[in-house]
Length: 424
Image (cartoon, rainbow, N blue to C red; front, side, top):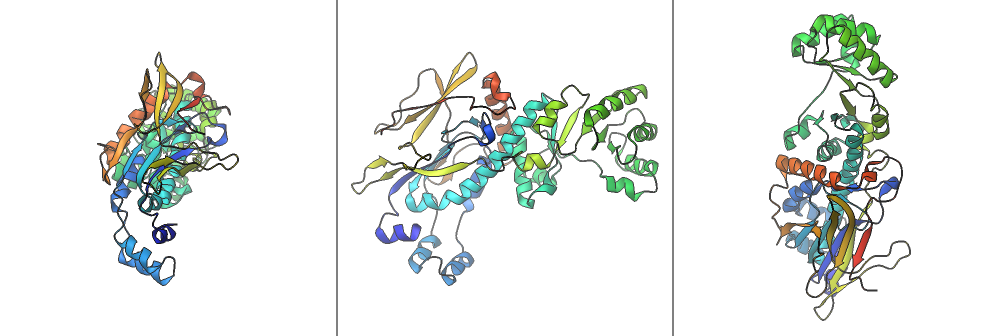
């Protein structure tokens, strides 16, 4: 596309692209914006170096003119978007990219690969933290996904309220609390369970978490408290009927005087399993596979579509595809959320006209400025501070949703979307 646009002179036309979801996956009621901070970290370094350009030329991917253009490629446009951690519904313009066609079209794959992955994980994580109802959720999915995706998934989970991660690289990059327990291999390494527990307590102290279901749970709990004392930090249950085991283990711990010892459960948990354990005496949940794979929805289904472009006369005109079931709404849109009594009631999208987009009385604007003239202007949106801000934003945004938004059953989006000023 870039090569052809350079050849016919349209590459320099002003263009506007929007990122949005036509529908939410798997009958979910809301989505979660995640990955914005990562995208803003990557954007300033998006370049085509000599090695990349040499490969493009040798393989005949693009012609010499396009290679020359890419050698000096920089994004110098503007980006607005929903703040990371915000919730969204179908049609919400999560990101609006303004620049020349030559600039904006190059961003598509980077934008969608980051936002689709991270938003999918965050949406699953939000359902899990909601189902946990205040009990901590811990991310343990690094071994179930690509090594770099694991870092991004840990970050996205933190945006949606996860309290810690077993991924140390995510902890290092983004300041996330890191957690972990021993595996069955550590117990099996020793001649007996007593030796394994004694070694772990000696090395890490009595506040450690002991895995108690390698052999017999009740016997292991007895040994654990005898070796670590009643101040044992926690025990982990990783198999069997977790609800029944949690009740039995809590009674046993209390009987042994370890009333402050916590119970952590793992073993292929998802939001439905977490909800089912709501009445069990569980203190925290360790979640792996379901979290990092989006709990059945590994992509958020976001698309990157042109909504306006400069015509031959220099005027910016709204455009949209008319394909059946993929119809678009022409024109850049400003997003507002109608809120009454602290509860959101609708998403209102106002199509920009010649004078911009008018305000919606009584509603709050959702989008914020992220990039201006190619420079990141969103203060505190990246690094560890960005994750903390996004987590706070998500907590506020989810609390604002109507009560049925937190149901795990399949349903319609929790907010209707109204589009004002759309032209046929």
